[in-house]
Picture 1 (cartoon, helix red, strand yellow):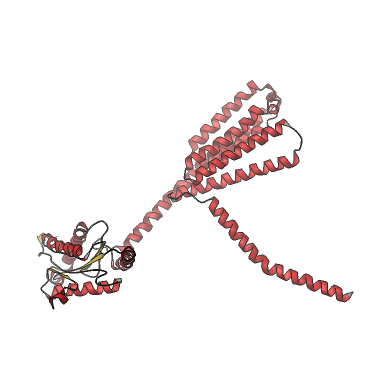
Picture 2 (tube, rainbow, N blue to C red):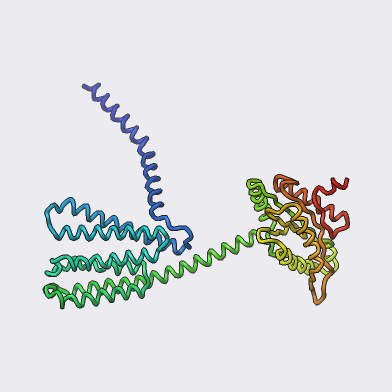
Length: 407
């Protein structure tokens, strides 16, 4: 007997250990599945701003809560009300109709039609209690309990709609309630004044809470907008050169790699131009560094004015600039470099009431895939072409690979 008890205890302990081993994993998997379902349910339509997404999520949760509550009421009614009561059938039909309407409102919200979804949700909460008034003879006999649900549209409006709409809805309901005793004399047998006071208090509290929430949401939206603007400015500063307004070297290194991969994938050319400002040190030494800064500030807009919308210009170093031209062949890049070389001479830079000397460029030109398959090799080749332009007398364009032809 003792041995059998010991064996039974061992079996139970083994089963318990197994359950303890696998139960956390199953719980974790269940939580992950539940999280995915919830995320799918409350997923907002694409293209919405952050405030719109926030309002959409609030509406999602309210609609899901109402759908679940209505579903629970229907299930309880089917389980416990087994008699053939016409009143129960009426409310089952009414609740089922409200659930269908809420599902439609939920679908509108998922499609990004927040306003239509909100209006439909509040409208359903409004007609539900009044529908029971019209179809339930017991209400005509003095049963005012279904009318207590009239506070639901006011509460929903205070959460979802503006203060003005909430007050209009509350006033409309309050006016209809004032008229009811004239059409349903049986309501005079109950404490109608107390009931009206309850509806009035809920309506006023809903309007006040709506006003407070709207003010808070307005401040949150303004703070969010300011934060987004600050982030945008920070991103702009992180990729822009302050002096010229062009993209900086960091942006060039990141974007050039991406453009080369795109050109390789689509079998398209990519042109690259490296410009070096001639005699920039002489400008600094003669007129001062402030004059050199004035030249750089003028060059930024000038370069941007002579490139396509798909091109991007970057400040590569002190007085060196790189132009990247997606889908431009070597010949197109060379022609654009010649144009820039000519336009630079027309640039007039004024400093301290006088015009500085004429600006010229030494320019190197290269292209993908002729002169390299990655960003580092392309930049190295175009840099060599630019230095060759320097050595040959400046104020000229040299194309990578042309020196071999000359040899």
